Amino acid sequence: MNVGVLALQGAFREHKGAFERLGATVTEVRLPKHLEGLAGLVIPGGESTTMAKLMNLYGLDDAVSAFHAGGGAVWGTCAGAITLATDIAGRPEQPRLGLLNIQVARNDYGRQVASFETDLEITALPETFRAVFIRAPRITDVGSGVEVLARYDGDPVMVAQGGLIATVFHPELSGDDRLHAHFLELASG
Image 1 (spheres, rainbow, N blue to C red):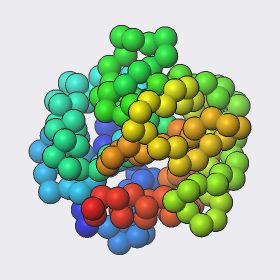
Image 2: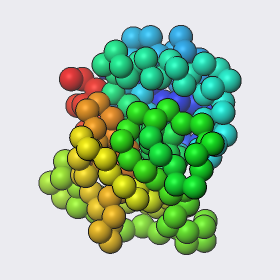
Image 3: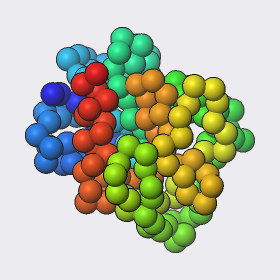
């Protein structure tokens, strides 16, 4: 299976490594043409405003939306979750794809020094998952059609809607590739 990782900035190398350990072929996506032939795409953590502006500059915003509309699975982690959200609290002007029916608040779990790890129960996994939160956004509202797959202190931290997944934490930094395997299953249809 061939999956892509948006490689404009952020933690794309770590996602690529996780998928390669699972035997997937990985394409670094920098232009719309790189989406051709992919089953899924990860939008990694990084800086969400910068990422969205670069996606717009290279025509990837429309291309990723069309990719998803055509059946491609998309997973946003941390800043990628912000990019997928329909609403960003207090930031109506921030560019985004608006594909996933959630509202997020940027950096709502605290600054860099407030980063933390915790074990999460995720409905898609039989055992807990060690999640890494770094300047994580908080999902403040979940709209219709969105399934909550994991919570931290009562707040959703992993959600899904159709072929979309968002995690506000960084699975690629955990050393545990089970969520990447889950995404490969989703992408394979």
